[in-house]
Length: 299
Length: 280
Image (cartoon, rainbow over all chains, first blue to last red; front, side, top):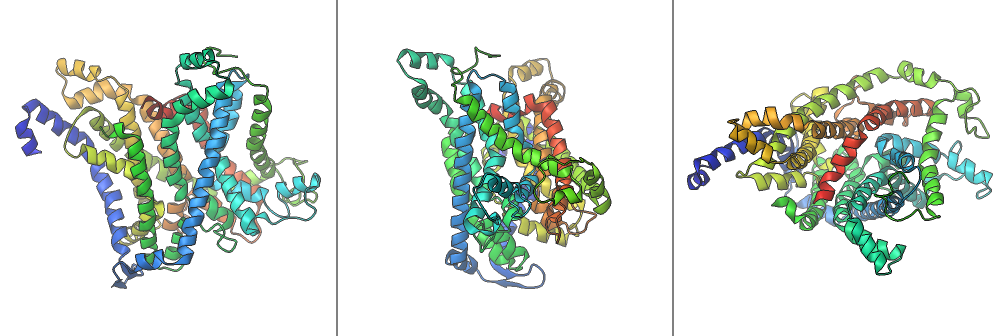
């Protein structure tokens, strides 16, 4: 700071000091509450430890073991598939509904209010509602399917590996699409109208207008949303944990649940920390993609 | 056709059926939750299923307070989330202003770290926090939860306030400076009043995030007196016989604050959420 100040005018140096003063409380809190625990977590990953009296240094052993453990690799694969399906679902549903809501639709305010609702439910509540709907004996889904004659016996949806996975994806899509819908709606409304008029003059139909005007206009917003969403759902825990506990037979064992179990049920804290660091690196790969997509934020 | 000038294209005839299906998919689970919460125990497990209770009752809404320490869960959630939100808001407002108005050493690194902090898996921080709070004797305490909640609300609050301050023209700062205001006085008397809508939106986001948070509270508390609402509701499902009417009543209680916030503040919330994304 002092070296820099020497090169600048006194006024600029004063402004630099003022800026630092405004930011320093938050910076201090983040160093203490975010950076320090993060570094400490990396430190723990180098030890075989119960966090109490046993701290055996093992170096990178847990990283090597985790990356060659078929169970962990499988849970990474399940998590990636989960995140990809959930985010694709959000995009498909969110953008479609945004296009519909942005058109000259009647009762637009009412439809929008209803379609935003899932966003307002806590994740715990969403998980419980869907578990209740999928209940084999008293669940609404089996009742409806039996009434219309699609099934003849009660199906235990959450006890079947494939259906359980479909169910946790479905619940997450239901919960999360409104955010993408709102972003896409705002994006559509910010696209200048004359572009549509120009496209119409060139003979572009409705679909062509969407393809060549709306979609390019939405691309920057959706690009950012996809990456942030992917990271959020990649580390998601609550809905899956409360609906299936990662089962049946690990079919929905996303990596957050795997780490939670390793740490707080097997008390293998070092290994769990190593797994978490691996997940962090995967997420950082997306952080880099994020910065690459929004370079002007860093200017 | 309320706003024909802003509409993009006419309403295709297929749009209405599509909207109705989408609304049904949204409303069926919501109405099923409501219907379940209004049932008594015999109606709950009636075969064939009762779609709407014959004798709707608010019994489940009362009994959650008698059968479980539900009052304590609500109190804990409110105390933890309000304290964490207030702390985050204060720090992030100052930081957001500093970031938007001044160049200083470490600014770029700080912005990068803010973004990066969105990438941390929460399970990554929870193991060290478990150890740190245990050593500090703060495990199973509201203070411990407040500290961790600040840790994950402060980065995105700072990011939101930074975005909001950037939307306030710097000419105002300059005019204040010409009038002889220092940086601190400019901030408190000129800019802060203008930033109020942004502060409201930011604190509502922090509140919602904390109110919904499950994993940290699950691991860092274990006595009934310290548990938060999501953890209290979540554990009802582990019981031998699940009282779904009480569970759904509890779920409705925990959703109400978010509905109220949204109802009154939706204009602020949506515009602040999308401002950063659209303007850039």
